[in-house]
Length: 495
Image 1 (spheres, rainbow, N blue to C red):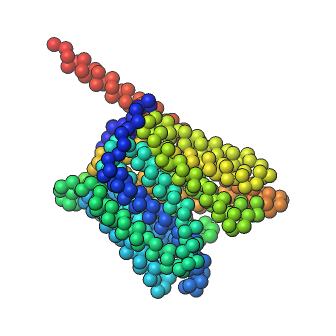
Image 2: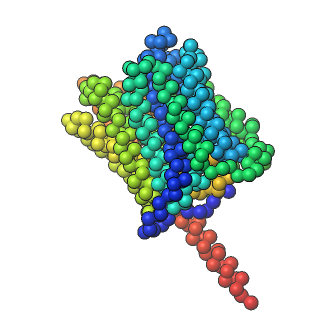
Image 3: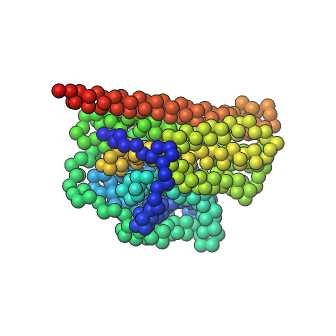
């Protein structure tokens, strides 16, 4: 059942004491794991043209180098989080880093595209372990008063991995060829293993004996449903019968999964988590805001290249401003969470995202690159603040025995938002460009961009509404609990 502990101190609390040395190294190992998983996503994209040339394959086949990684993460991330709760998070995290590192070597020596795609899927499984368990470990590795700062640092490392992937990948390909894209993970993975073994807290005694709580049927059903949904959102250039069939399969699989979770003694995902207003709101908001962020990744390159006529170098520099702003925001946002509480920072982050999206709609094309980059940085800074606060809230609502699966659910909501955003925001943009055909091409592209970010602004406002409702419900629940406690105490004091 969800814990009722508050995730952060109230406003006005004094600054928490500095972290002990061991806790700092523990956070360093978790940060390195987060960096590796983010780098695995971003660095491969820049290598697709080189891979197409090396294997003599069309883009439709080569893109599976990226899709296999993302599909593996999406389908197993909740299950590996639950396995960490059952068998011990430390040993599973070490295994995940090891799998990721070995798979990186297998990618680098791949003699064929099929080998490379399979190795990337294995690498994605390792990345799923790292993503699910790094956040789950924060509660064990640092004092509660520093949880926000630790979450902010993890978010910063994720943003750094996303930002540096394309530029680092380009340098590696130019100097050593495409295998270097994957070999770069090996020394980082080995360092992460050394730090994790040395500084992460040991698993509780008896963690191995809790294997009776694993839910194999639920694991298979959830993986199949998620795989069907992810494929429906990514397969083919247009929505067709295959996509519809996959969506129906995902819906049936999801319905069957929920039914099994309500009946089994030890479910993969306890449904009680979704009855907690803070948890349910956290998952929903995470999916919505990552859909907003995906709009910047899908629409930005088209607007900058076709409406503003930027070349590849300047386009890359402009696009990197978003992850850079997120990286610079994460740690300060974490400190604000520790000082002011997570709810205030959540609302501030969502408000910034909504404001940035509105600025994107209203900024005239005559402002040029600044008219896109400034709102982009407002959006991504708000996203970093929101993620730091939301992660702190969600992970603070559950006991240690459920942190792995809840972290997996939180990461899953983010991945589903990215997958859905790529499809839906791309469709909105295409619709906007098509309906603006009487305009010049650059004007049609600008109209499509504004329409897309108009939808993004509405999603951010919906997230703000969810945050307000969740806060109101949680506050009402706390007041009722306090009143019941007072009444019970008064009744017990009577003769």
